[in-house]
Image (cartoon, rainbow, N blue to C red; front, side):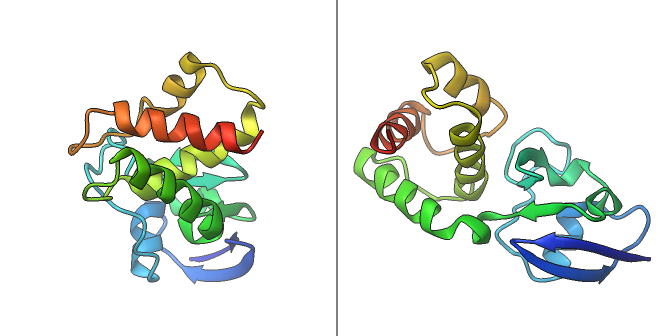
Length: 150
């Protein structure tokens, strides 16, 4: 079936199966920043934004994107690069498998809250797993990044 939506600001029309998940369609069409870590909506590696809200694309049928705006990390490249600098400063950039999901979550957090509390930051990050760090360095990097934007 035909699926028409906006991917990082560009209208696309893709052929998808009615039961195909968005993560799999994105990867099939070459969007390889979408990582599939669990395929069960448990790890956050497949996070995308649909109409500016973070969703786990391995749990959303591709057809749900019809007419919507889907943003992957490619759609926020400059912001992701700036965040990566803060990750580097804090030593939070080990394997980076989780980095695209974290970047999109931080982007959404930044648009949801002007001055998020520590608890609001932690609530946003809770669904993104990282097997390399203890989260403290990521948390510090994200706080510093958000403080820079004030």
